[in-house]
Length: 87
Length: 395
Ligand code: FES
Image 1 (cartoon, rainbow over the protein chains, first blue to last red):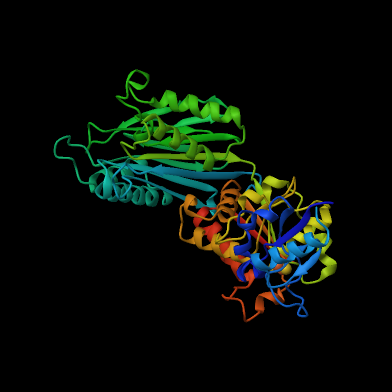
Image 2 (cartoon, rainbow over the protein chains, first blue to last red):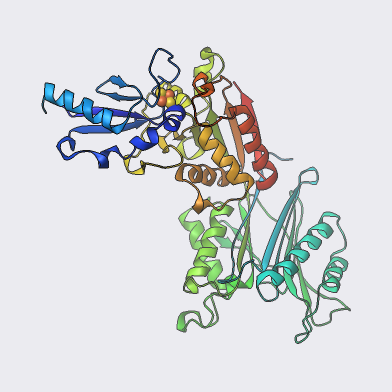
């Protein structure tokens, strides 16, 4: 199976609301998750204007949106996905 | 004005190690209506604040006299009469070089006590000719060298203080007499051979850094280098903000046509519009990602543009330009933008006027200024403080 795909938004709203703290995520990653994800930074995921969503910062993990993203939230979801289908 | 000419005047300085102020001063001015470009470099005797005041007095007076077309000898006498005189050496306390370029006409250069100017056509030197030495009856032992030269498109003038030509003096065999004008000339020629269109901004910097390097990175005398380059204007385009009407996206994106070195895209949504139009993805270097950075990282659309976040980055750039903040103290994306701007002569802003609703969100920790106003400020600063030609188009 392919590595997980993580896209971090670096747009204005996301950055101001906490994406700056996600930029080091690769180094902060718990050992069991290392090497299992491919990380990309993107200019704006164009979710910030969508009032139906829960709020920035946004990231996408394998295409699925994580709202108000924090490193912990992302790690949790990575674990779930990896448990469901291990690499 | 002939719009195919741009006179790029840029300078760089190092202050003598341990001094609070640079004892050299450089001033430049563009007289658009007369098609004239003026520059003065002065070196105040000694160093530090006192030297700086003397040098600054000199450049200010010289520029005023140049501007008003006052007779050369008379101007020089007035300057020398007003400067204090050194008790021991009985010479006035500052040396200077003055340049008066008339596009399509004659360029006059006047030097008193400063190293002789260098004129380059491509990498070839055009040796100083049509030279006249005048002495003032007030100051019989001071000689003033006057030149009348013709500048052509592609020519460069290099003027410096003796901190450049004398760098390395006494540093052992290689530079017994210092770097000298000949060393500086050869270095500049090599720099041009390496990069034929090197900007004045870059050339003034490399020459100054080399001079510093020759004196083992200790600045023993103030180093100042002024470079003037007559070139076809280098145009840079800044695209920022989505157009007000979505139908105009394609036309807007088509402006990103000058190549990566000359195009800047500011803003996430804008980047997405360009991405779609050119069918290439933005690449953000993961190594540039740092937690706690004050600005979002810059990226690139290969071959097309440098890409940065929008309003936070522009706000930072604006402040740095207005306050003349040193480049190396700025966050990387702001530094990259200013560096790009300084390498260009004419800067065109293509501004989409759609307001990003998300930026009006009251939960954001900081009020975001509107893009239009910010661009206006940047454009004004570039124009009035950095002699750039600017143009703003709205979409
Ligand atoms: S800024 Fe992150 S989705 Fe727009």
